[in-house]
Amino acid sequence: MKTFKHKVLAASLFMLPLSVSVQVLAAPVQPNGIVGEPDRRESDFSQGTQPVVGPKAPPAPAPVPVPMPDPQQRSPSDSLSAFSQGLVHHTMTEAEISNLREYLNNSREKLQKALNQAKGKTSLEAITVYERAILEIVPTSNKSAGALELLMRMSLNQGLDLVMGVPGSSRGGALQYSQNTGLKAQILEGSILLAMKYFMDPKGLNSDALSRLPFRELGWNRLHQTLRWWGGIEDSAVALEFVERSLGHWLAIAQMAKNDVPLMAQEMVDVNNILVSLSQTRKDMPTMSTEKLDEELRELRGQFENLLDTLQRKAQAR
Image 1 (cartoon, rainbow, N blue to C red):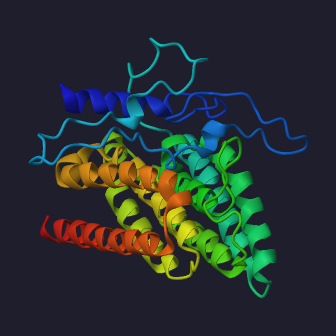
Image 2 (cartoon, rainbow, N blue to C red):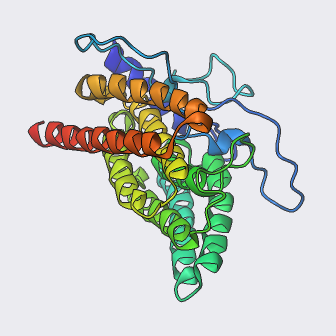
């Protein structure tokens, strides 16, 4: 029953006319009202940036994994009938496939165009090019491509969240006050390159493919990027915020990786506990000595590297 349910729910995504705006994994909010800009909603840019962090778990053996919610089972939009979803499956026509491929090609081409435009420019100019492209692509993709480009949007949103913040969010970017424009440009470029790895070909799309989106791979790649970028941050307080944000991104991804929960259950609990501790550390920072903060960062780096190693070993052993 569980497999059949997933199939019909995921297949229902393609019953809807392509003109319908499908909101994936986020509740609709009011547009930000920027005149002349795409209709950007906070929900468009929240994918992959906001984990659900619970209270710190006491030390205990790894709990029996509880199946995580399937992102494809959440209601796409309040404007759709609650009883029209997931009832009928049909094989897509060549015209439908062609339309979907057009959306994919448009997003891919726009990202590649941004990479080409940024070549030879200063870091500050490149940041402007990348930011403009991401702000245009994410809301358009969320409306037109839905789950097909979900991982792509998550990577782009996380890049924005690290550098300058996402539209509609009350928090700015982790590096918003940093003067290291070179690092900021690298993060946005790296996020775009990572996003381009996760396009799905609609020709072979089926419910199994949607249920097996490579969330775990995306999460590991994002952690690997974070470790590389971490070395370019000299300010300890900024580094703490940057890594805390990045671990939150990983947990947000892991919480959507339903099929990989048994593989990552212990690491999800560990990262949740780290995030709870980091939140307290940031509260204590005004009275914390430089030596104590540096000690906290060294311990955090060790935990971060252990997390990467463990996830890689488990992936290789699978």
